[in-house]
Amino acid sequence: MASVGKVARIGILISGRGSNMVALADAVSDGRIPTAEITVVISDRRNAAGLAGANIRGIETLVIERRGRPREQHDREIVAALKAREVGLVCLAGYMRVLSREFLDVYRGRILNIHPSLLPSFPGLEAQRQALEQGAKISGCTVHFVDETLDGGPITAQRVVPVYQGDTVETLSQRILIEEHKLYAEAVSLVLRSEGFESRS
Ligand code: GRF
Image (cartoon, rainbow, N blue to C red; front, side):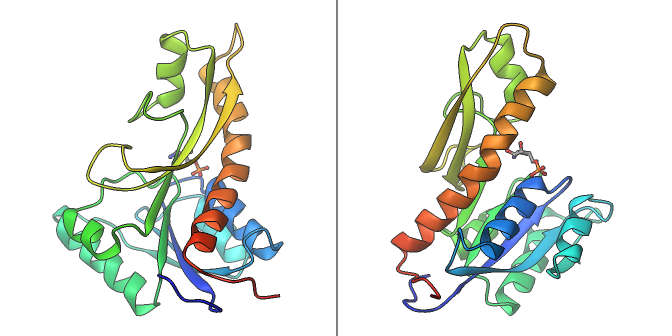
């Protein structure tokens, strides 16, 4: 990905609401990620609410559904779309599918994910519920590189939030989400700087 003086082309994969995608797009627009552009947003679900948020920002969107195909075949189509647009960094933002080995091999070390817990605690689904059920006093969010493991790749950034007595999944999720939106932009900026991307200014 190293490419001094050039702008990193980011592809974002979503399945639903897309608030982290919007947070990344806005961080690029307002200069908090000064070395990048959001090149494409790809959803595996036609009705993902996040698609509207991308469209309104003038970002190209694609819907690439699984349609009963094997994972590898679905991923091949996504990878082809990313490569055709010379995407150098892939950000998963609420993308609800496990990536195939083939996808990982093409973009190894260039795929980030955000997860709503302090990994390695509470990987997988319903991380906020897991934290509450375990009686955790703190939780938070993590940005990490994606590998074959479930939410287990190298961590690039974390943010802690308190868990209050009386918290519900909804109140804790909302507290974490506010931090996710800031953290993802910071982590992407950090990764791009470490890859030698320079500011446009
Ligand atoms: C976020 O909590 C993210 O950490 C998790 O899925 C949720 C996606 O939310 N991976 P959004 O689609 O970005 O609003």
